[in-house]
Length: 434
Ligand code: PLP
Image (cartoon, rainbow, N blue to C red; front, side, top):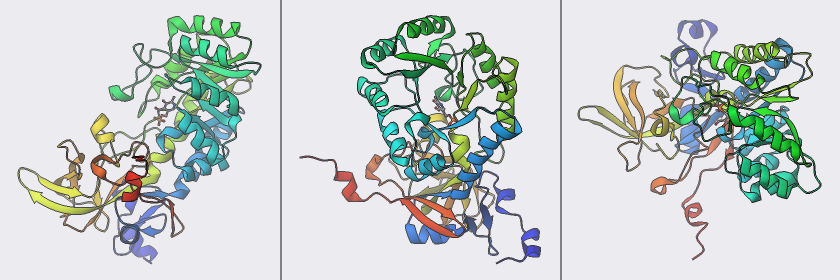
């Protein structure tokens, strides 16, 4: 172990790369440790690519959210609903269920995963702009706490399915608030595929109130993702409040996180939650009002807890220096889908100044994980780490080019536990029936 003097003299993992998990460090040799586990040893033992998660970060982030709403901002009916789509991994879902969080699901499959991981049905919110009859029936039969109704067809469908049950529902509203983010993850603008426009929400509310088995609990909105400013969230609350007074206000997720060192600082969990609670207070849903406030964070609970480890397979120089690794768009689609930026490091030589393109192994020119990476003279065999891959990487992974999906490894106090095994070639043919 490094002595405290040595540690003080050498920059820590966070100074070099603030997007890494909080529970990460450099050892005396300058090698990255995640949850007390050596990244290069993990790569050697479990192979690459691998998703590595600092388990304590997940727990600490969940607790920080709950504390920010209930204690710091003082809202007694504040609950945190984990957006399962960000990291639908049973071990993470189970951890959040044990922490007392709720869960947001957007399909029958996610509902299955949430129930299987231990969420009680009353703490599950079902979303989706194209819920099937089967998904709605499943939600009703399993007794989910809230269904966020997205469109008029869904009201008719639920009316036909609800029978003699009483189902609590929300109306999903697109409040025409546009945050500064990529078009593909902006959802609150008027021309969105999600929810009712402000001009239709009143009619939706009136129609739901006509259906005996549907109980209108409140409103839901989610204006977009990776938002680094708080003002759009305040505007969202103000818009929703124009629609009346309700018991439940589900304000969605969307607060941004740190992906790269040279980006604007994301709001802290405490600042984000305080802004929402303050805005709620200005519109009669604050502490003491009796209203229930829900927030639905996805990426801000998991992104920075996770990293991906890769191995360099080849390095070539033409106009650029191409560093090709053993994964890519099959384990992290976000750079290709939204031009998302990541950074990369050699796991035993963080930092560096060699401009490189970190490319994946897939047969697509667009399969580039980091366009402008600065690495320390990378060579074949080096282990590369990309920070902040804990959200939407695993969720959107695929078998493109017959690549098997990586394992998920939870690390804590120096112990690594594989919570999802690596896929095998046999898995690739396991669904074939002829
Ligand atoms: N809630 C809803 C309805 C969403 O659609 C999403 C993301 O798409 C989220 C919550 C989570 O968003 P984020 O991961 O940006 O916090």
